Length: 589
Image (cartoon, rainbow, N blue to C red; front, side, top):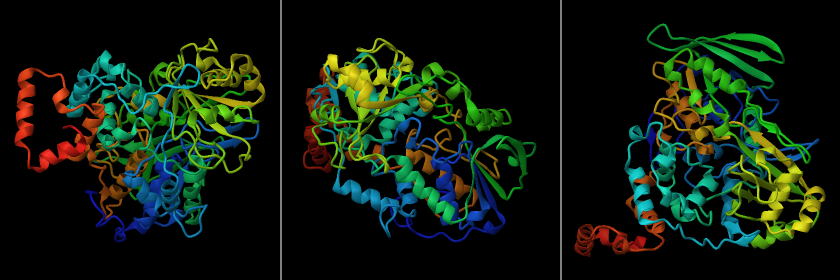
């Protein structure tokens, strides 16, 4: 396996791998990573679909890609994934998966046309004082000191950031900025999260720094991600004979590590309450999605909160069993060991009449019933004690959603703090109480809030004990390599496997690890597209620097006189060169 750049081989059909007809594949988990890897096995590895088996402990596929209608509760979205142009592996996958919406089109075609015709951007990124525009504009309000700290983090090696937290590399100046407000609410970062992952995000998305204030960097699917992404994948795989085994929990995988190689020898699993085993040879590949951010999710309803279930469930337990067999299989305890820091509460609110939509339209300045972009991403109530954020994607968000209803996704970054209207922590609130807090922050008069929350909306809270686990402080080696050293037939895929330079909590990361795993195990003669290299593009770096400075010029930076003198002389000497042109085009001079 090797990394490629450019489109020379991007669509080339690799040769059929040697002896692939004698090989089989077993997947633990039916999330995006597993289904993507199955597609690559079929498309690029030319493996027959009937040789591919996917174990899933739930009765449905999709993992953490969400969107479901529960008859007893209503519409539910636990969360969503933001996407962008340069998810190279994701789009490579979906160019080959037929759309369920448009005849003779791929999922990529469908997504591309939609976002060309209806580009995403926000007209109100943040509010204050019960629904008033916070007028943050496009300013990051970073001090010179905070900008310097961002640059220092950018230049720091990962080895120097082992186990470091974000609040260990930034000062109070940084945490007071609009940049941090945009950043943490968009990506769900907390101050105690991994500085290493923060650095990766800055480098990975440096070309999108300018799009943070209005969310124009983002793209979204037409419907929820279960219907828009998961279902096309399932249909594609089923059409090729892939075997989905639901209500099936893998208890352990026995690995032979007694020689100079690591070989998965046995899968032990429970299916519909019965324990079973599968003996493996070196021709049987095993792909494990280790860990899960949505493991042990629980739901409340209008009148009851979602109760915390700290159980580590099948995915974390399996990873622990694997890690006990060999140190190269990672350190799951770093990620799942403290639910007080990894838990996350969201809620899905469905409007039931015409009373709430006018308040939404007043803030987002768009008619939410047109089928086009509504909020353009999250709107953050900047002065909320919960740091409440909410979003409406294109409506209807579900295919079965009535045309006169809207589905709103709500979350609070601080689930353990008391609210401003409801004096309780978000994690202890029923659906009606979360709705009341949200209605308060979008400007509904206090006297009308309670009745509106009870009669004009149906709100389903969701408690997820492990959503923040991706971002917990870690050291190099805490996440296993996709193919651990010496492994012959075992691969780790998903966001708790290690893929250099890319960022977790993204659909791209799931697909990238899947592609790496398949290409390495089958020795496929085609490159994995490297992570988009904007972090090494001087134009992207200069443009990002200009945006972080809110339009200030290099001359305006508060640096010692001698340094400023040298900078000025250097800039003057660069006149007539491409360096001067790039500085000018970026707005730095």
